[in-house]
Structures are given as structure tokens and as C-alpha cells.
Image (cartoon, one colour):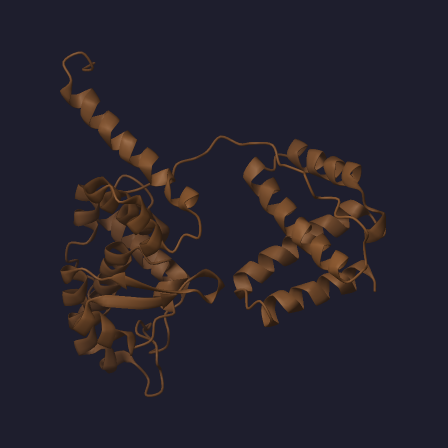
Length: 297
């Protein structure tokens, strides 16, 4: 089996058996293509730790961040483990390899006031599209959904949202989770449900649809949100994931319950959620700087 054939077989297994998303499989494909390029035709069973170390050093010198290198090493490590299970390599040259650390960047979140401004009624010119946008953005902020989870919702999700006050989504690795939906988001969804059928084609199951009556694309949601923020004069580029960050930060500030926020976000590890405790400290530091007599500048 050639290296290219091994990569193709591995990617097929990720997609068909492990049921990873097309986006995740595409990332693996790109990462493994970098491995084959760096190997320059050297057989996979000849690659050793010093080869991998040299590859990583070369990519780091070209400006690849520690975080990106860590993702590459993770993809390569998993691939070599798969090869080892099939007797195609004797050692995993990525074992024990660590990427250089990069400064940790905190996710950007809106303030509570900025989130409220963003979600105020807006005049789009088409009241039906405005009802749809309001429902999408309220739901993103109310429940911390990922963009893919939002656009993947079908119309039958309305039953759980409106009657039970909760939405069921399929997160990463098709892992389901149940998240509460706030009262304002439910009201916005009632308004959208009342006009949705005026736009939808007969056989479209999607909850959120575009002008042509089909499931709205992630890119369309991004553009609509960015345009809305621009119209309202918000001081930064706003994207759907920023509403997820804002949800997590604001719930954590109010409750202090890190484990609950982890469950609602669908993080596999509490370490992924702990970044929002740093955002909370930034909020406290801002209050301190404005309020403490010895901190005023």
C-alpha cells in the first residue's frame, strides 16, 4: 500500500466508521497531505522521531503556530497508530512529540450591553427574514449553539423548544446534548414559525431557510450577523461563534457553575471550558480599574 493509498483508507474509515464530520475529515486530509509532502517520498515505515522533529521545526520556522502544530501532530499520531494496528509500521514516530507552546488567546465575547443591542429588533426590509434572523441570533446567544448545530436543526425541533423549553442538537462526533432555551429566544422562534412556511418549499425539513426556501448555509448566517452588527455600529466584527463565547461568559459570570457551562457547550474536557474563567477575570479587572480609588488612571 502506497502512502497516498494508506491516507485515503484512513480517511475513509474516519468518515464511514467513526462518522467524523466532513469538515473534520477535510482537516485530517490537509494535515496528512503536509506529512506526505514533508516526507518527500520516504516510506512511512522509515519515518522516525528525528524526521518528525525536523518536519515540525521546519513548519514552525515558516510561521505555523504552536496550536496548529499540535493539531498536525495529533492527526499524524492517530494516522501512525492506525498504521501500527495493521502492521504497516513498527513504531509511532509521533509518540512523545510535543508542539512548541503559543501564547493562549482568549476568545472574544460581547459585553451584556452589546449583546442586548445586537438582538434589538432591526428593519431588514423583509419582515420574514428579520423574524428568521432574530430567531437564529437569539437561539445562538440563548443556548450557545455552534453554527453547524444551528443550521442543522430541522423544523421538528420546534416542539421541544416551545413545549419543553429545550433544544436537542448533535454536536461534534454526532454526540447529542440537550440545552435550555430562554424565553426571549422562544418568543422569537414563535414569530419565525408563523411566517416560515411562506418562504419554505414543500419538502424542506430545515428550521432555518434562505430566500429560496432551502436550508440556510453557514456562510449566509455569518454574513447576516456581520451586516447586522455593522449597521448597529458595534465596535468589532461579530461572528456566530462570538455569540457562543458570549453565552458561556455571561452564564459563567452569573452562575459560577463551570460544570454546567461545560455540559451546555458540549465540551468533552473541562479544560476547554476553563478559558471562560479568564474572561470572567477580565470583567472583574475592568470593574476594579473603574471603581477602585487606587486603580483609576
